Amino acid sequence: MNILFINHMGFLGGGEKSMLTLMQGLRDKASHQVYLLAQPGELINQAREQGFPVFEYSFSGIRRTLNPVDWIRGLIKLGTGISNIREIISGKGIEIVHANSLKAAIMGGRAARQAGARLVFHTRDFLPAGIWRGALIGWAYRLSDRIIVNSKSVAQVYGKDPGGKVSVVYNYVEPPKIQADKAPGNVRAENECPANAPLIGYSGRLHPAKGLETLFMGFSHILNVLPGARLWIVGGAMPGEEQYPERLKTTAREMGIAGSVKFFGWRDDALEIMSCFDVLAVPSQKEPFGRVTVEAMMLGIPVVATASGGTLEIIENNKTGLLFDPGDSRQLADKCVEITTDPEKTNKMTRLAKSEVGLKFSAENYIGGVQRVYDSLAGK
Image (cartoon, rainbow, N blue to C red; front, top):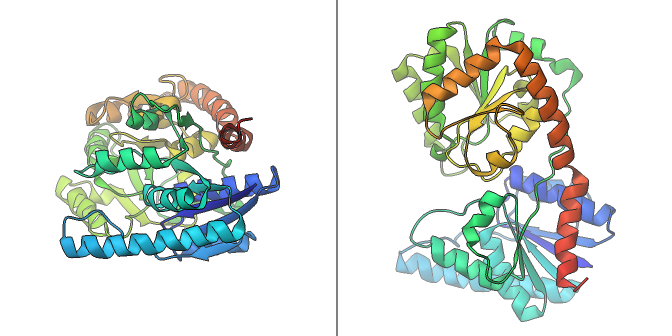
C-alpha cells in the first residue's frame, strides 16, 4: 500500500515524533511504501535521514482569519496546495493520505477526493478554540474516511460520531534511554542543585493552557513545607508564543520564588534532566494525551497531574500516580509533598506505573491499531 503522510509543521514536536515512529513501523513491519509531505524543517530532515521519500511545501499563509485580503490569499494558497498534493497522489499511486494535523486534513482531504484516494485524519489535540472551531471540525469530519484520535478524551470532540469514523489508538511512547554520563547526580551537580533537595519538575511546551501559573502557586506552598525545594522548568514556547516564557519569569519574581526556579528552555537532553526529578508535575487544564507523563512513568518518576483529559487514561489515582482537581494549587502542593515524604508508597506506585505503561503504549499496539484502521478502509 502506498501512503502519503502530511504534516503542516516543520517543527519536531511530540506529534511529529509519534508520526515518524508510525511511518517506520508501517514501512519496516508492514512493508508499506511511505512518503512524507511537510513544511521545511527538522521533521523533513529527520525523515530524510531515515530514508523516506519527502516533498517540501510551505503551508505559511493558510490560517484562520477575518481579514478579507488574508482570506483571499489563504484561499489561493490552499488551492495551490491541494493541486500539488493531488499531483503527488496521482504520480505515486497513493491509496491513503494520512493527515497529521487539521490543516493537513483539509488540504489532503480535498486532494484525496479529487484523486480517488482515502483520507485518514490523525489528531492528537482538542483543536483550537474560536469562532471557526465548529466549522473546521465539521469540515474535517466530512472530508475524512477515518479519524484516529490518541485518547477517548479527544474522541469526545466528534460527539456521537454518526459516521462511525473515529477510532482511539494510543500513541507509542519509546522507553527513554539516558546517556551514561548524564546520571541524575551529575546533572544536579552541573546545575547547582543539592542532591537532597526535593526537586519538582515540569517538561514540555510553555503555554497558558499548560497550567504553569497553578504550578507556581503550588510551588510557593511547597516552599512553606520544604524550604529547600527546587522547581525546574524544561521546555519553551512554540513559534509565535515567545513572550510567554518571559511572562512566567516575571511571575516567578513577583511571587518571590525565582531564586528556587530554573528555566532550561528547549533541550536535547530533556530526558536526562527529567530523570533528576523527584516529582513530575503536569498541571494542564486538559491534556489531550501526555507523552511526557508516560515517559516519566517509564523512568520510574512519580507523577502529580491534573485529573482531566487524556491523563485519566494514563494514571490511576493513588495506584500509578496522584491526581488533583484542575486549577487547585493547594492540592498540587499537598500531593507533591506526599510523594517526597512517603518513599514506601512512592516506590510501590512507580513500580506499578512503569509496568503498566510499558504494555499499554507499546509500538505493537500503536502500529497494529493504525493498521486495523487501514484494513477497515479496505473492507478487511
